[in-house]
Length: 472
Image (tube, rainbow, N blue to C red):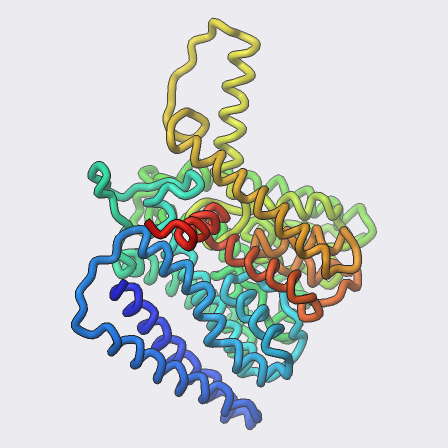
């Protein structure tokens, strides 16, 4: 327990340091919200010190279940620490600000803030960037070693003494690649002529799959094809496994554990991009081929990565809503920043279904036995559990959120948006639906829990409930 409390103290200290960035920006831009972010720095610094010194001198080893509970608690602790500044700067109620903070930190991107101070959107950018980093670290250090939802695990295990990977080890593995991709995206945006402000917000969005962007950043995406082509590889990067990225950087691509899934994802992206381009060219949009092709590819990459950014205003109204929801619900690759069911699980279930059908047609057919994807054993059981956990959570969130929406279509789109962490499919649907800030308390609570569940691979939500009610 002492190790978990020290982790909370460290995170609060990092939040305090990060809040100094919007303080400086607010003072430089002569905005009247610097005091709110400064208060966040002071409060978090005090809390971090108090929490740290409360366990000073106590030694304890953090086992996997403790680490799982601590990481799950971070998805609540950080938004709680950041919400007061958002409420003041965005001039909204604390409940709406808390939901906004959860949306930013889980990189969901559903937002009721269309415009506001530059310091507020930089705060969102820092939140979603940190949330993307936590998503990958939690996947490698906690979820994959626990076999949550059938996630691939390459950690060394020794019988029942199998523990979670140390968070600092995971940070050393992921941090340089994640930060490097963000810097490259930032420099690429500057090369297209964007301002420092818009470039930083776009870089944090595409590398974390967030979508909290100021109007200037949205206009940069809508303005032409150059920005879309530049952002495209970063969207695909965020949709594929971080271990595949490490293999690419170290030039050991053939030995990458997620090579097959990543290649399938790239093929899926190309096919889906052509389909979207056809809708943009032949459908209601009537866009020329020179615009329809990059728009279609951009929208495919954006949905697969669960970023959800539209290639132009009103794009979601020009493609079938069912197709958008299906792609968003499937999501991207395992151990990536993307949300959703994941290509890994869909592939495993299809392979298993193919094997079962072959056994029905050819009862005496001898098939090779596998214990991984599409085979038998704990890996395949984890895949089915992960899929069922997502569907059960999705159903519960849909029922509860329906109490606060004007129609079932709005509730269905909102539920997919929160459970797959792809908020813009609701915000930019073009249906005139009200924002999440107007939800009743029950629907708002369901939305927040759904966003966090999406970052815990949904099955993690049931583990957290188990830890709360069954402490032994």
